[in-house]
Figure 1 (cartoon, rainbow, N blue to C red):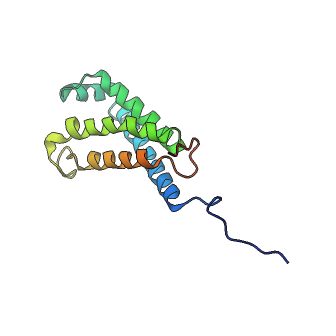
Figure 2: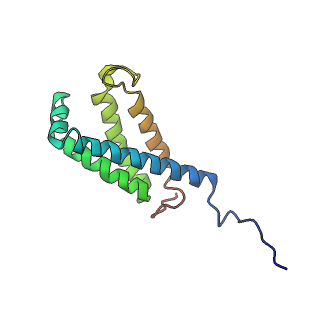
Figure 3: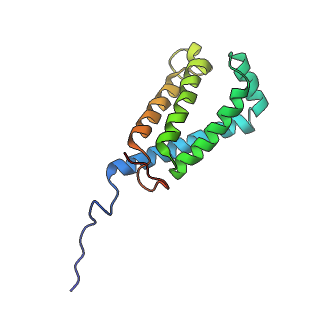
Length: 142
């Protein structure tokens, strides 16, 4: 007669690990989509022009596109999740302040308010605190 036992906590990811995975992958997909939109829809030159129009150096548009796409891919894969999250925080703070700050709080206003990038910033802080979670290629637990 054979018996089976329930998986132990050592073999089954904890809820916090699954939550970190969901947060990491969903943010990664959104960052890739957001960066790709800047690249394919607005074009790098158009994005640089927008950055200049809000008082930022145009070269930051190219840096932002690269950081969003590469950072998003790294989040999806779970590579250096804490560090990638920390690097992406200034991008979202900049978006909240420079890109949406003058539009007010709610993202539903014309031009979008700073509500969404502020929430995304908080999610990045949480991700940096909890790490990559389950199935990260490079688990960076504290």
